Structure formats: structure tokens, C-alpha cells
Picture 1: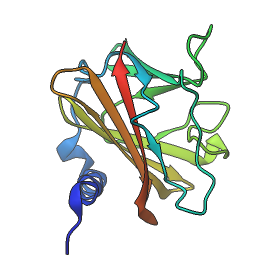
Picture 2: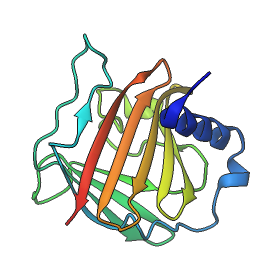
Picture 3: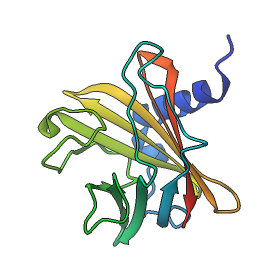
Length: 175
């Protein structure tokens, strides 16, 4: 059976979820991610909802900013950039433990009750991390984050465990 790159990433995510202590790092080593990343709409594909679903739309100025914050980093998400404040802020703690959504709105891109949401991050190496989202304790989303070797490109890929063949691949360029 062939899984391809997304199957391999999914397998890493499952392994990380089943052995969080083995993959968790004592301190964040997210230095490669730190900085401002602007969406490259021409290289981004938003197909997670499948051929008949309603796809998430991103503004051309959609931007992620990773900011050091002690032993972890904050992910500041701007639906439109620049803006006076981020649309969302999420703590990226690469300890392999599930943390509750601390926002007033959904942590996911889709609507939902943040009190029912939790997520965990694992750092795979200096330029790759994975995240698993749960709603009411059930895994609903896998994410893989990778920074290119030259540090100029960042790719965030997300998919549902129910339909891994459909995914969002967001490509960002360092600002």
C-alpha cells in the first residue's frame, strides 16, 4: 500500500500522539519559524473540503507571525495584514501535550466552541513541526508545518483523518 508524503506525515503524527514523551522537547526550538510569513496565493491550494465542499478562502494578505514568548512561540494569525492586532493568537508549545483552546472564538478555521477544542504540537526537527487538533476529544485535523532549508518558504498542510486525500496546502514566503 502506498501512502506518499502525506501518509508518511500522518503516520508521524499518529506516532507522536501515541508517544508524546518520546518526541516532546524540553524547550522550543522554533527559531526557523520565528518571523513574518505572507501567504503566496498563487502557490496555495485550499481543497480540504473535497470537490463538492465549501473551501476556506484566504485574503491575499493573509499572514502568520511567529513571535518568541519565553519557552514557546506565539502564532499570530492575521486574516488581513497589516492590522492593528492579530485575528487570532495561539501558543505553540512543542511538548506533545494537548492544550485547551484559550481563545474566545474557535481555534480552528471553521466555527465551533473553543471550550471543546484542544491541540498539541510536536517538533520533529529544527524546521518541521506537527499539530493535532481535537474536538470533544476526537481528532479532527492533522497539520504539518515545514520551513525550507534556505529559510525563505514555509508550508502549512492540513487535512482531516476522515478524508486525507483532500488537504489545504498553504505556502508562505518570509517577509
